[in-house]
Length: 151
Image (cartoon, rainbow, N blue to C red; front, side, top):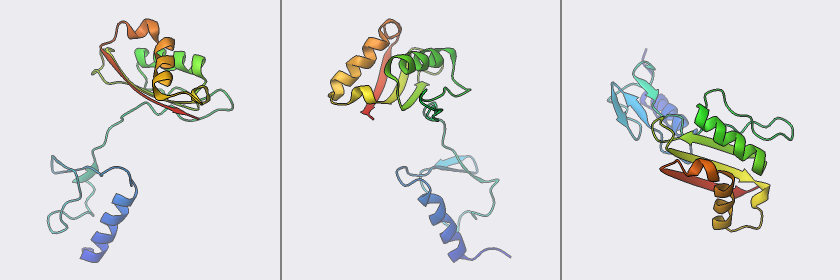
């Protein structure tokens, strides 16, 4: 017996509540939609045709182990790992995420850092501090996206 429209609406609401800050994206029969399909078009009870199509945006290096700060995830590339290790050593962050957003060639990185060393500094001074730490690496990059925050 198929679930009722009310049950399907409840499941759809539960799925969208899991990510309150992002619009959920779903892939249905090869097409990506930015919101849930109309209930009459595709039943939500068939997981083979409905799955989340989000991708990893940043390395999730936020797990803390004592006072050592975040540990680097297993899937970091060599370039991402180098940036991660330098920032971890110099800034002692409580959160650090690094991603190569150049398609794997290492010419552009997205970096998200939360550190107590940023306390009392303006955003520009926080970015300058990160730029000083990565001075040698940045010279060979095409660009960098920085998000910094004081812990």
